[in-house]
Image (tube, rainbow, N blue to C red; front, side, top):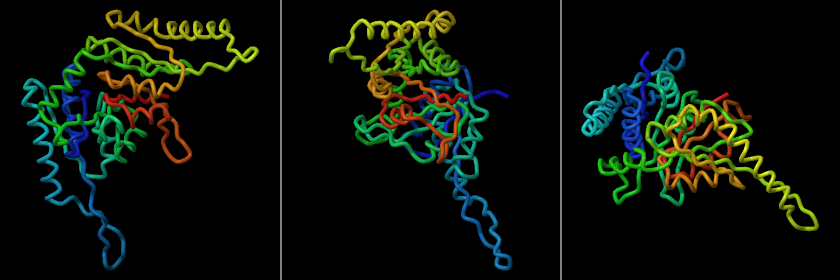
Length: 306
C-alpha cells in the first residue's frame, strides 16, 4: 500500500492553506498527495409502520458540492506543482470517522485550523480536535495566514512554502522524563528534509532550595548541568543518525508550552508528542500541546505515541 500525505478539506481558507502545506510536504517526501472531504449523512428517516430509523444517503447536491470542492483544490495545487501526483476522494459519512479512516493509509494527516490572529492563535474546531485526540498517525494542523480578505491565496501559498523550505527552524518540544523515539525522529527528519536547523526546547522547574533566604547557587548550578547532560545523552543517537542537521538545544526554566509558542513565531514547524491514553471524559491531549495548538503561529505536528 502506497502511503500518502492526506489533507482533509472543508472549503475553509485554513483547509486550503493545509493543502498548500501538504503539497510541499508531499514533494519533500516524494509521496502522492491525497485530498479528501467528507459530508454528514442526513438524519435518519423513520418508516411509518415500524418507526425504525433508516439512514438516508447523501443527496446529489451534497455529492456535487464535495466534487466541486475537491476539483478546485486539485486545480489550485496542481497549478504550482505540475509534477505532483494528486488523488481525490469524497467520503460519505460523518467527518471525524471518515478522516480517521483516511488517516490509516496516510504517512500523515494534514488539517486546517481556523486562526484568530497572532494574538489569539488557533481556534481549534470540534472536528480537528476530535480527530487529533484519536488519530494514531501524525497530524499536522495548519492555519491560514492573515491578510486583508481573510482568504488563502496563491501568493499566501508561496510565502508559506518559503517558511517551510529551510529558512526557518524546526522546533521540537522534548520531555526528558518521557522522550519518545517517534517524536524525536519525526523532528530530525523534518529538519533534514528542509535543510533547516532543529531547535529543541525542554522546559523544567527549578526546585526552591534556599539557605538563609537565598538560593543555593552551587546546588542549582549542578542541577542545570545535570539537565543539560541528560539532554545531550538523549539527543546523541539522533545527532549521529542525522549528522547534517544542526541542533540548538535549550533547557529552559518554566512551562515548555510558553516557550514553544514563542518559538513558533519564527518556526517552519513545531513538533510535539501526544501520549495515547484515555481521560475520564475522552481522549487526552495534554496541557502543553493544548496551549500550543491554541496559540502557535507555525504549523504544529502532533505525533501520537504509546
